[in-house]
Structures are given as structure tokens and as C-alpha cells.
Image (cartoon, rainbow, N blue to C red):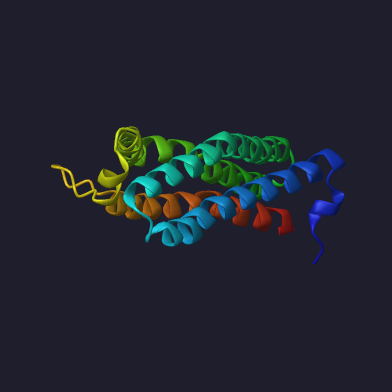
Length: 178
């Protein structure tokens, strides 16, 4: 069984590689934050924890949307280009890869907006604490403790990281289809 990828024009092979690489890179970065950063920060004082989260969040915000767009557009172009050939099923799989990867953006806006807002509020409040207050931070009236918020954020972020992983998996599958 041979792959039809070899018979694709170089522009479509490039789109395959770009889509798969960017969605896999995006997934790996997002999952690493939940799996590596959050547990390592669990022993930090709350004010340091939320400030470090803000730095990490800012870095992700600067890169992740662009990676999702590049990957989704690559998959969408492949789907569109192959939809006019006998590779309709392959085109459908690339369309699913585009949707899976691109859905990281609405997932973030819909499911993570609240916890992101609460953590950002914690960051702003931490700027007004003196050193002694930082060391003795307790739960606020609503129970939004920094550690608990970050733990919930990590669960949502991990879930979010599975979306571009599904996109990369579908992209690999489609590129190997005959």
C-alpha cells in the first residue's frame, strides 16, 4: 500500500507538514504547561504563583492563536484542494483536523474566560500587597483561592491541549490514507 501523499504537488505536501507540525507543537506546548508548569508551581506562595501564571499565559497568548490559525488554514486548504479529486474522504478528514485544531480558540473563550478573569484579578490584587500580606494570603470571600483556581485552569488547559492533538492525529491519518 502506498500513500498518495507522494503524488501530491509540493505545495500540498508542504501544507500537510505545516498543518501537522504546528498542531502538534501547539498541543505539546499547551499540555506541557498543564503537566509541567502547574505542578511545579504548586508550592509557591500565591502571589508568586499568579504572577508566574500571568507570564506563562502571556507567552501562550502571543503564540498559540497564530499556531492554531496556521494549522487550521493548512488543513482547510488541503481539504478544499482535495475535495475536487477522488480523495473526498481524505478531504473530509483534513476538514475535521482543521475544525479540531481551530476549536482551541472558541474553547478558550467559552470555557476558560471566567477562570482566566479570576486569575488576572488575582494578579492585579497581588500588585497591592506588601511582603507580609503576600506570605499570609488566604481565601477571599468567594473561595477563589489561587491554588484552586490554577488547578482548575490546568484541567481546562489540558483539555484544550487535546484539541490540536486530535487535529495533528487526524492530519497524520489523512496524510497516510490511500
